[in-house]
Amino acid sequence: MNLLRQSMPALANKFYFNYGGQGPLPTPSLAAITNSWKKLQELGPFTSQVWPYITSEIGLTRKYLSDLCGVPEHRLSLTENVTIGCILPLWGLPFRSGDHLLISDCEHPGIVAACKEIASRKNLEIDILPVEKLRGGASEQEVSDNEFLELLEKNLTKKTRLVVLSHILWNTGQLMPIAKAANLLSNHVNSPYLLVDGAQGFGQISIKEVASQADIYAFTGHKWACGPEGLGGVAISERVLVESKPTIIGWRSLKNEYISNHDINDCFHKDSRKFEIATSCIPLLAGLRCSLELLSKEGNANQRSSKICQKSSILWNLIDTTKNTEPLLNSSPPSGLVSFQVTSSMSNNQIIKELGKKNIWIRSLEEPSCLRACLHVTSETREIEVLSSSLKELLN
Image (tube, rainbow, N blue to C red; front, side, top):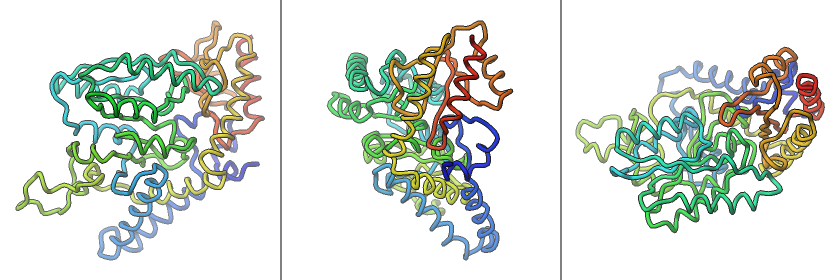
């Protein structure tokens, strides 16, 4: 049995396919969190002895995450989740009235709502980039990439100031050619910012090339990285560091806590720390680092991605050959997300409920209407077979 799997109590009594929602926390990571809590209390939660420990924990984690993102430490901000990582630098960008935001039609509701609100406040226009119909899968990735780039170029205007994309679409599972998109945008007359939602990438595929080329690449530790909820990060480009203003402001944003005699424009950190706010949960840092170290023992990011794709390919093929089920992608997925639709009298929610009775956990999505199963390096062939056979029983 996979050693990482053995360390996850949540996988001992169920068939779990919801890594894209939240990954199980390994026992060693929980122990790392608990030990950090104990250390803080031994030192005293607010004493001169505790600050070197806190500074060290923050520094170690920032360095770890910046290395994974392929960016220097001053471009990596610690955040609570993907939403915060996207919104804080986004809302500080110097938009002008009449600017256009180009958002794909497969973005998470959280970022869509944030873009609509800032558009409303600053008199911006929102354009939609239609990527939902890109269904190539791994074997057709190059074709899908070219089709995407044509769509992107077609939908850009002289007023486009921001493009919002996901690294992996959370609903269909399609992998977006972010590096190619960044190159295209760099040659655009308006040089639009590129914001990337990395929620489904971090922890299961290499993000280094993409995160280092995006203007804003936000990710979370609680999904594929199997870390604790409440901790993530965002890689920020040099130009965003210069051009974006702090939005939600706290003592961590400031160069000096005592600003009464300082110009407000010169009181913030000049690096990514200006997007960090105030007191955060320090023990989570140790938990996330531990989870990432455990993942690294399963191979580097590319090796883990290959293992994951082998497993998702098995499920894709079973679904493709099962009556009343159809995968969304035309070929096996480029990641662990396997989305599919059913033609049955049963609704998606009914299917979720019936599978849940057997301790099989997948999820239902609304746009497009489908079911989604997520496979990780911890997933086993027997689990995939149980899910497939259970679907056949329900739908035949």
